[in-house]
Amino acid sequence: MSSKRGRVPFVAPLRLIAALLALWVLPLWVMPATAGEANALRPVDTSSPRATLQGFLEFMNEGYGAGVGLITSYLASSRLYFTPDEVATLGRSIRYQEAAQRSLD
Image (tube, rainbow, N blue to C red; front, top):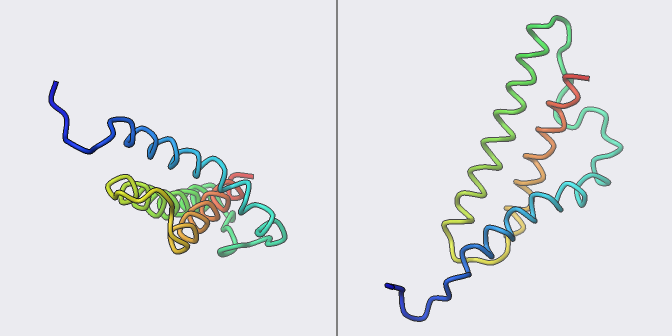
């Protein structure tokens, strides 16, 4: 059994759990702040089915890119908490995903 000295074997799973918990809890924290904004990013173009789907895909790509890039860099680091900039990026990612949801309503 080969293990690195001084490294606790359960730290990586704890960091993964912390990241997943942050993604689960953060929408609850951000939601009241954006509840009053009807168009947080820009109006959703629903003039045709094609425009609606295109808007949905654009919002999802923006939200996914910001969120996954952040989580990947966080998991690669040795930090336990997100920085304020990272929290803001996660909030922006969530707002993009909410806009994508609104486009399908």
